[in-house]
Image (cartoon, rainbow, N blue to C red; front, top):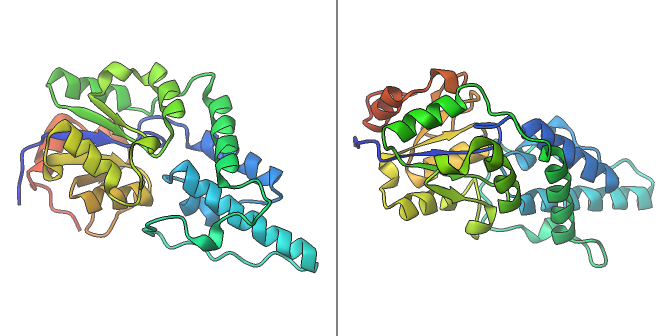
Length: 255
């Protein structure tokens, strides 16, 4: 079913700004403090996820490492996660054992480590500011929909410009984060538009799954595609208002 373009909903980290390397460094640092070494197999549990989910994952890995040290064995292998998982809540199996720091404390350390790394400013990705300004000039509502906490969002917006967004949905604004559709559904609801008339721009499998589940049209800027497909582009330099309108109307065949 076709629809007119009603709004464009952007992910933040890795989509509009080049911060994913800083986030990975922050996660590596906190993991090392916990006696854990992250590998590329952990990427799906780190990128595009709320801080609480990442903290739960590090808690789980730290618990495995502690058990391995006590037994004198190598840490149990952690299987690479599926490309898209949709947990309703943090499972009990990854919660912190009694007497440990706990997920909230680890989450605070992750946020602090990330905030330190972006304090000097962030770099918008090529095409990001041009596209935001094009949408603004034509009166298309734009929302920022991110798994990052508000503290991080506010720091990024000092570079990107808060005035470019009609709405911001940060990690604290929904009880359930990506890959569930809640953040995108909230953005559409608060803008007063149907998700079917929204185009979401994402870079991670987690975010793409969330936008697709919400009923949005989806553009992937990193080559990933969720169930149902997405328009894949190399970067925002190739995205413009006519393309977004065409996609919203169903005028682009995908998959």
